[in-house]
Image (cartoon, rainbow, N blue to C red; front, top):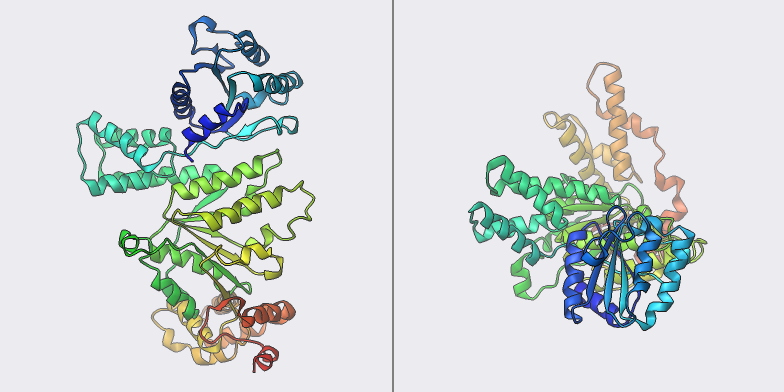
Amino acid sequence: MSFHDEFELLLRARYSLIYIPTFEEERVELAVREVAQRQGNRAIYIWDFVDGYTANPNDAGFGRRNPLQALELVEKLPVSAPAVFILRDFHRFLEDVSVCRKLRNLAKLLKSQPKNIVILSPKVAIPEDLSEVLTVLEFPLPTAPEIKVEIERLFAATGQSLTGKVLDELVRSCQGLSMERIRRVLARAIATHGQIQPEDVELVLQEKRQTIRQTQILDFYPATEKISDIGGLDNLKDWLLRRGGAFTERARTYGLPHPRGLLLVGIQGTGKSLTAKAIAHHWHLPLLRLDVGRLFGGLVGESESRTRQMIQVAEALSPCILWIDEIDKAFAGIGGKGDAGTTSRVFGTFITWLAEKTSPVFVVATANDIQSLPPEMLRKGRFDEIFFVGLPTQEERKAIFTVHLSRLRPHNIKNYDIERLAYETPDFSGAEIEQTLIEAMHIGFSQNRDFTTDDILEAASQIIPLARTAQEQIEFLQEWAAAGKARLASKHSTLSSRIQRQLQ
């Protein structure tokens, strides 16, 4: 349902207090006016703290610097007069006891009147006293058609014309930005070159990175790692390579749906996060990293609003990769956290979106502790596939050593006995192999020489791999994967001898 339709429905249903979190006052006020006209030309009253009411000449200045008086105007109008009152930045006054009480009184009064109060705010800040009477309505970022109209308007103003391909690329790069930011970055391009050029897409991407940082929920993550940087995991690589073109228009014509996502479960340091970065690089898609802990805020409704904001930004930037690292820590022990159900509501919103989303947002979630994940997360339909990423086999350790040494010593890699290194490091994860090489480099550097195979083996002897310190947890994960709960990321995954006996 579009914002216009949803807002009109709330007006007709006489939802008296509507809270719209948005930075785009101009766009939302225009949308409210359009809906008000569809509703029989309802009167619009706009108030802010500095100027009071400004939209209606008869009430100009009324309620200036007085939020309580601003609410009193609602009662002064005739009972049958339909109206919408837009209160800018009114969230700052909701903690005031008199304002709060007045709003609660008006909520009851306006149930029988065709009047609605709309609070505009850049964020959700609803005190508990008002949580039952305020209805939060999300205002979406500009759609691709809206952005295209605005860009064409700017082009017409500069006397320019662009080919369809360049225009489409510019529109796609602007998705995820507010209309104000789009106008600002394109005005910057015009001021720089006197016109908008195809190269100005990079300016838009810079603005987009800045916007994503300011959400304080998502990070625009640079993805430079390649699939060839991953040692082993051949089954997972094959699965990813088959879906390389799944976001193209040709795939839609063929009838393929957008890939939904991937859950990577396994032991720490086995390349799950590296895989997320490599997917974005190989598919040439932006990589957004979500820190789930940032979704949770202290105010009523704030966590749910941040979750919706995250979804809104990710969908506006699609096609993209949404990387959620260690998702098991975020939703561990749902229902027992003592947070009035906030975690459960955030989790419910998130998994519902996972199951129902139609936008090309490919979710890559990683988890170390499968026991902490709610069963709903593992249900079919949330992700396209669940892969178990286990400890590398000897052949995979050989590939991992080769990847790292090719990067560190590309010209004399033949000086290293990679076969021996792979054989002498059983139970080592990819991260532990990398740390072993770093320690070997310290040994060589401290003695003013290059590091050798013997240095690497000496460093390895000083490292106790996680496979030995967390043996029970790892064996549980291996049993879980061996029972058919997940696909094996490697063609020849390493399983403990006890599990191998059970499978025979």
